Image 1 (cartoon, one colour):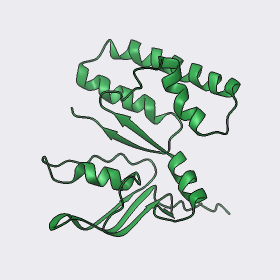
Image 2 (image 1 turned 45 degrees about the horizontal axis):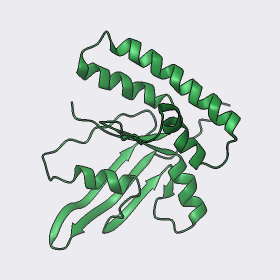
Image 3 (image 1 turned 30 degrees about the vertical axis):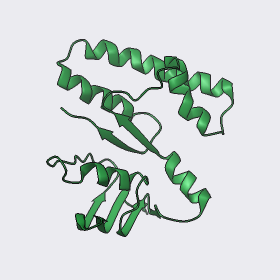
Image 4 (image 1 turned 90 degrees about the vertical axis):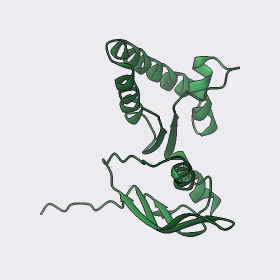
Length: 171
């Protein structure tokens, strides 16, 4: 008998409301994103896109409602659960958001060192792997229009470690 294992949604927003003083940003928002789905947030300036991204990444708690990542409540007070959830997240910024005082190598190594579970040899191996992927992206991007290059870079990033990635890109 072939039993299919049911996985919880990667992200689930349940009855999310957000308010800053008298200003209502979100009202009873519900969203479910399953593994493999690609979702975009669209809206005008000031419509709450960035606020929602901050809530989905655990940087800002909603006024009410529940946010679940991989079936776990993002507002779980247990620090071990919080660390485990946040290790599964990644953020891709439009303009890189690199540390200007660090080399490319050290910028890539920084989040790996923050995990505090890898020795320097493994960090070096992973950095070199990611740098080799970067070379592939640069070669591929040279043949594409600038808008397409953003999509290729995002696609390559999706092949790396994080399981939920929030990308803030203006096309």
